[in-house]
Length: 226
Image 1 (spheres, helix red, strand yellow):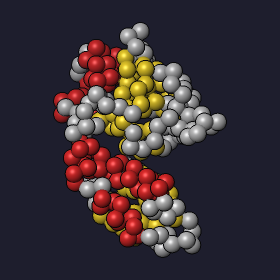
Image 2 (cartoon, helix red, strand yellow):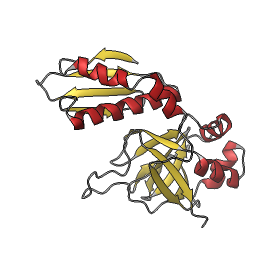
Image 3 (spheres, helix red, strand yellow):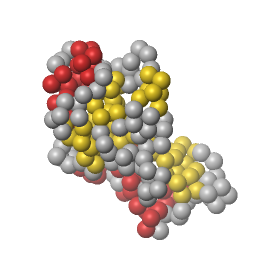
Image 4 (cartoon, one colour):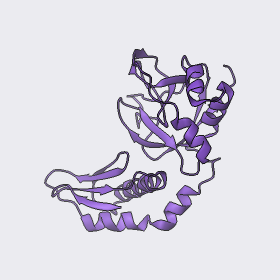
C-alpha cells in the first residue's frame, strides 16, 4: 500500500493490481467505512476503485491522516490472508441467473470450452465487487483471489464484443476480459451477454439504492431454466 497526497482534505491509498492486493484494498475500505460509522474516524467519503482508495473529508474540514493510517494498518497482513483464504461457499449476495444470453454460445466458443463448462465456471466462481461505475448500480466483478487459476484464465479469455449493442436489457448478466456484471437498466453495452437475472440492482427509493457495493462478494446461482 502506498500513500499519496491528494490535497489538504484527502489522501489516496494505492495498491498493486494483483487479485490479493485488490482484495486487501476492499478489506481496508470496509474498515475505513466502519471507522467512520463508529466515530473512530471523522466524517469522510471512502471511495474504492480498481486499485486505489480515496479518503476525502468535507472541503476545508481537513483530514486526520494519522487516523486513516491507523485504521488502514490495523487491517493488516493477517486480515489479508484471512480474506484471500475465505471459503468459496461464502457470498454476501446471491443472484439467481437463467443462462440463456444471446452471446453465451459465442463466449464459450471464444474461450474454447462448451456452454456447459462456461456456465459451470461462471456460477461456481465467487466474485468480488472490485468497484462501481459506468451506471448507477453497475458493479465490476472480478474472481475472488481463491479462484482456481484455470477458471480465472477461462473467464479472462472472453473479451469485449467487437461491436457494442445500442441497448442491453436491464438484468442482463455479462462477461468481458475477466470481469462479470449485471446491467442495472437498459443501456448501451459491449460485453458478452450470458444470462439474465430478476434481481433489482438499483432502486432509487431503497436505502441504499444499489444492491452491490465495492468489496462485497457475489455468487451467481444457476436456475437451470436455460
